[in-house]
Length: 202
Image (cartoon, rainbow, N blue to C red; front, side, top):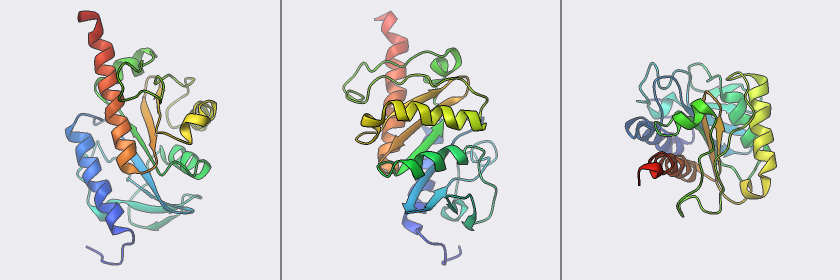
């Protein structure tokens, strides 16, 4: 391992989080990525093909340190196509310290059919329902604009709590003041999705 890599504690946390996201079926081989702001103007991002080629088994040095202009400052590899979305959110909202894009198992029916995941337990109370942004081609400039519009319309919540957004036919994106909070939000909405699906049988 190259000992000159900076922000090693965050890198280790990201590697552990990637493994948990995979093992807990919070994403699949079709995609998944996340980013953490480590200081003003600098972000640690997971590399491209994190899921499909690496099965989310990442080493701390796999994380790419970038600036807001997408220059790779540390690390080797290719940036995810979702990097523009992560940078847009992290550079716009100082209250957001981490963002995760994923394809959680129970969220995916809502993603596929453009349905709201209603908040039905106190785990997401105060954050509101997880609704759909306007559809756009995945990883496109318009997709980033639509995510930003979704967050802007919920700005009061965004500046105080993690939230989630459904990207129709693609996946979800969540925010958090740090990676712990973002991961928590991801898993919370996955359980809300499960409750939404099963409530008709109870």
